[in-house]
Length: 218
Image (cartoon, rainbow, N blue to C red; front, side):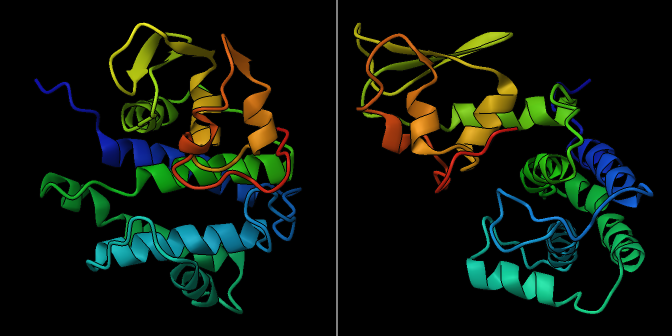
C-alpha cells in the first residue's frame, strides 16, 4: 500500500465540485473574480480547461505566464459553459494515465481556482477538502523564510527558514495558508494575522506569487 495521495482522484473530486458550482441554475458565470482581476467565473473555467488540455498533450507550464493564461482563456472565446465543461472533461480524462506515468495533475491550480469561483459566486465551502489539505501541505513545505518561522495549522505545524531559537509563530488554517501562499491576501492582511511577533522580516517571503493588490475578504 502506498501512502502517496491519489492526485488524479483529488483532481477529479475538485473538478466535480467546480462543475456543480458553475452549472447551478443561479450561477452567474459572468461574475467578476476578485482574485483574478479582469476575469469572470467563465474565464477561470476556460483557464482550467486550457490547463488540462495543455497537460494532456505535454505542454506543462507551472506556473504559466500571463500571456499563456490569456491564450488559454482566448481558446474558448464564443463557447458556452456547457461546451467548456465538456472539453475540460475530455482533457481531464487523460490525467489518471499521466499520473500513473509519474506526471502529477495540475491539482494546485484547480484547488486555488475552486475557491476563487466560490468567492465570486458567494458559495463558500469545501475548505477542508482532501485536495486542499494536500496542496496546503505542499505549499507550506516549500515555504522559505530568512528567519525561523513556525506555521501552526489546525492539525500540525511547519518550521521554515534557518535553524534558530528566535522563532516567529503564525497561527493560521490550511485554507488561509493556501490563499495567502497563492496571492489571495494583501500584504496588510498578512501583517494583521495572528503572529507571535513582528512579521516584517518575513512578509515579503510568504507568497508563491502575489500578494494581492487589495484586500480579499472571503
